[in-house]
Length: 379
Image (cartoon, rainbow, N blue to C red; front, side, top):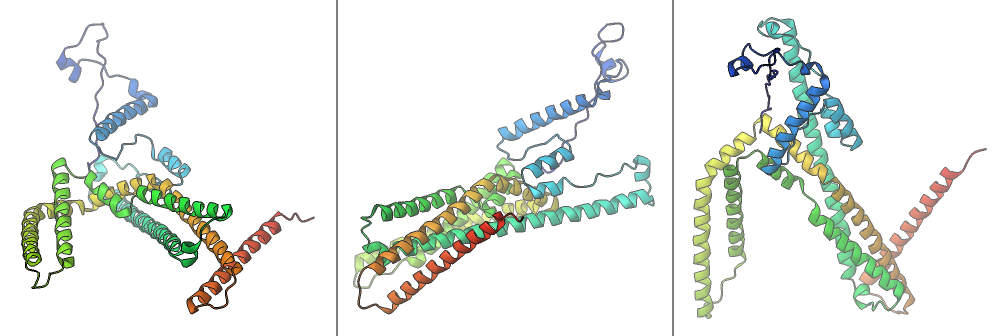
């Protein structure tokens, strides 16, 4: 999977000039004349497309995500630009090599060969930098979306745990509609959170692409064993020992602890058996060639998840707005109720609600003013 597939094809006509069928030896050595289809560039394009289709069918049948693209770099770059994929567009922008010939390649002091080696070195550095930039950009985007979702979810949870929300009966249709809008936004955020693929999961999925079936099974079984071992260790830490007076409970506790420790030891032994093979797989995947291929597949997985990431960000923004609207409305209802005394926390919440309400009103007014200024047509 880490090497390019190169096919050498020799084509000859099935019949001689006199119309008779050539012998097998004639077909592959000296007998039949050469086919002239190669003079037509369209025939070569069709042949490349057929080879790509066969390879992709095999890759799909074996559950691989990577695909072969027979098109030119220019065509692939244009498609990447249409899809707003700047990473692939940069990769496909590489300068093609100049042909120097087989004789020049055999001479060590050939200036053309030295320039080619330097060119390939610089191109590899560029490729590595583009890969690193893409990985860092994806990670930054993931952190931004995750922080926004966490902030909006925390705001919604804080509102639903507040006294204003708990004591409100939501008799008013307007308030009830705002509450339902917020709950719908919470459900929408949770839905897209389940769809999102994290960068870690995408990279792990890409690493599995470059393993054989036996390696994949071993890799998954090893980390599943480590996960079970960790869960049992955490279970032991949370388990409380009963008092000495509770003999039956104490006996049951000791039996459970002994059984769990025996299971942990068996999992530890099993992981040691698999560890060496897993380290060899990991070392092979850490090679520069495999690593770059893995990063490329990781990019493809995350790029396919771009729509879900955008929808999650939009749902988070809508949840923020729904929470703010409902909080301000509940605050307005609280102000309408006559009250002679307030606790310190209540005073703080009132001032905070009023501040953010005024701040939001100011921002909306300023945005409307800016919009009107842009629409003014000078004489």
